[in-house]
Image (cartoon, rainbow, N blue to C red; front, side, top):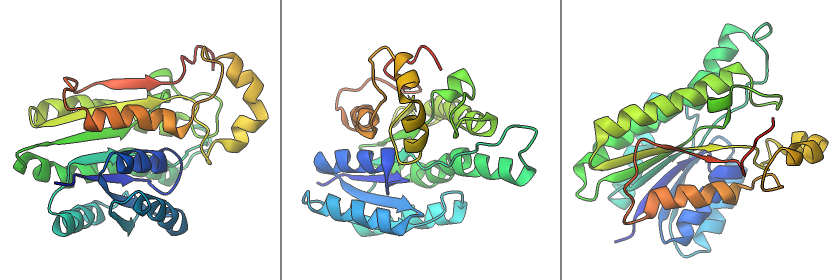
Length: 248
């Protein structure tokens, strides 16, 4: 029996690393992203590992589309075992500059997207004998508030903090069949942060105990554990992956 994972924002960065890591463990992968070329490349790399890859170009803020995608995955593969809510978008404007529409968009992409896909996947998990696993990517900024990087102003931080509340609440609602956890990355060298990191790398690294910025694979390793470990007795928790970032 081949298990199936759905990863949103799977075209690049943390989502791509999560998709490839789970594929390396034998999962078929359903990829969701707006960026079709990047998603196609990730899918091709997954297929080279000898497993199936399904691709869905979609805006994750769409509730209807989330249900369509989950239904399509289950129809094609007969099951869904893991949901990784990774898709997100920056919201760099300060409070005195951001518009209502921009704030709403930040919440829709970074927080409501998690609700959309969990709402679609939860009945599948609850109806399976094996249950399921949900891992949502939050942020260190959910705990610390927005800092000086371009993606971490108040709207982004608020949305990512909302993921933690969603995680704790749904762990209670969906247990014992579904484990629900979150991961809070610190500074991770993704395409989104590459320019910011290159301008400030020496200063950033000086405030990280492990002496480097993180990689998408650093995040994927804990996501993989939460998604696959057979003896995991963890739910409703968040895990900080920041190399101990003691200075912002």
